[in-house]
Amino acid sequence: MNIISRYIREQKRYSKEDLKKIFNLDNDSFTSFVKDLKACGVLKVVKNTSEQKNLSDLIDEDVEIVDFDFSNDDYFYVFTYVGVLVVKNIVIKCYPKYILSKEEPLEELKEVLKVISKYNSNEEQIINLYNGYDNEKKFNFLAISLYILNDYNDNGIYTSQQDIVETNGEGEILWDRTINDTFAIIVHRRPFYTELQTSNVINDETDYITRLHKFIITDCCRKLKKANLLDLFEIEEVDISDEEEEFFGEKDYILYRLERELNVQFITQKQILLKTLYAYIAQNQSFMDDLDLSLYGTNSFNMVWEKVCAEVFDNKLSTKLKNLNLPRELHSDYINEKNSTLLEIISKPLWVPIGFKNDFHEAKHTLTPDLISIYEVKEGMCFGIFDAKYYNILLNKENVLNQPGVGDITKQYLYQLAYNDFIQKHGFVSIINSFLMPTEKESSELIGEAKMDILEGLSDPPLINISVVKVFARKIYKHYLSGEKLDINKEFEFYK
Picture 1 (cartoon, rainbow, N blue to C red):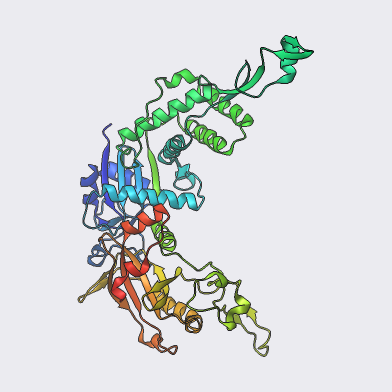
Picture 2 (cartoon, rainbow, N blue to C red):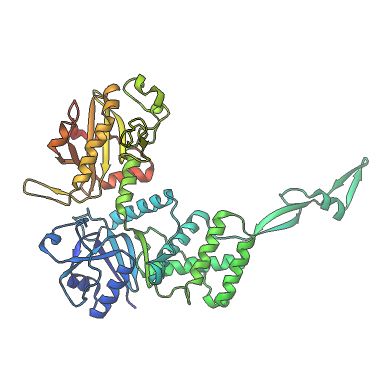
């Protein structure tokens, strides 16, 4: 079966004929293709209208069509996923929606996959063994294979250790065994032993589980190479086994051997690996000769973007007031809250019963900004209120498309209002209130602002409008992957 490997842009509107042409599908295979992807929640179907054609973001008003006629062409098909999808013999490489200049952005997608991988590891997300929901669940070969190969790169081959006794070895001397099992030479009434019994731990390279691990690693590489995915995930081809699957016995026997090894293995990393190998074998009849349906990535890349920005822009929301680098010492009004964080000093809503003004009930939750940055500028210190928005906005003289909603704008004003007292009492010389959106352009750019005149006069001095900034996504990813913070003042020179 020939492998078809194609790039798809997230949230681009594709017609039925577009997808049939891209993936060489006839009507029957197209129906199966769409059903599989919809079952996994990575494809949505919306009405084919002139308004939809110009959009690159699904919004709340976009009603997904659940029951539709596959023979009808009056629909758009929208991929809501960033990452890699494998459907039988089709490999779909879904790249982020803000990449507009390239149709096959290999290097960009490589970097995005690394970002997703780091995000998943930081969030302690588990391996996705299955795709889809309920009866539509299918084994996720791709995620399992990548875990096995990445574990091999980090930890090497699974080894079974054996304790042995050596003569005159380099390990610990076993004195009881030496005294009881060897002869001593007596010199001046003192015993001297010419043969010392020592302990040692060796790896059994012929161990069944070690051989099985090598075979599965080689098998995973073979399948990923066939799917043309080794380069995308930057995995070197590994061929460390020339054994055949039948050398390991029937599937039930292999599972039994893995269970037995699990019972005597107490190292966490090796336990996880053994369970992964068990799942790999248990869910297929012939070591997954058919990829069927697998995925690696996320349909919530907005969450990834928020996390990346929070890390790179040095989010201070969870920092205690006493630990902040403020323009002046902590104001007396905030001394009692010195152990509170920036998030905790935002006032919470109060519920007050009629006639009982002093018996109010404080709400559990309040406003929660995405990130707050405090950084130096030429004149002093700046208080940055940023909201990472994963939108592909178009804002020019003629039009605005794919923009955040009115709720997002009002919240940004309220965030500034909530911190206004803190900002004024600590002598910040400037405030930035901004939406941060990704772009493929190689420099950050201020493209406009969002404003609501009725909110500007809520405080004195007046609240500033919400600037709309497009930031160079690949630069942000580079800092995130290396653990570095962004020099915001230098990056946003257009504010000067």
